[in-house]
Length: 111
Ligand SMILES: [Zn+2]
Image (cartoon, rainbow, N blue to C red; front, top):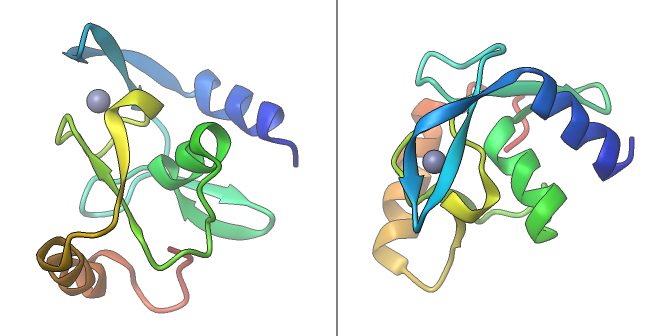
């Protein structure tokens, strides 16, 4: 599936958010979600988190990367690319990210 098709899929199931970062409005996923309120989407037969897919589309993020995609807006369901950043070079952050990941991602899930 191309990035463009995937973006269309995300857009179709999203609503404008009530929050802004640097004047840019967020996008809220309205489809399936995890119990931690992260958006979930099926892609190439696997489950992915919507904000990670968004980072793949817009930021060329590697979906298989160990790195985390973090929210500047602290809204887990938001996938507006300008509200996201790749969590790297922050040992403390990565540490807590890994700990959180254990709870966030049940076995067999793609990160
Ligand atoms: Zn946001």
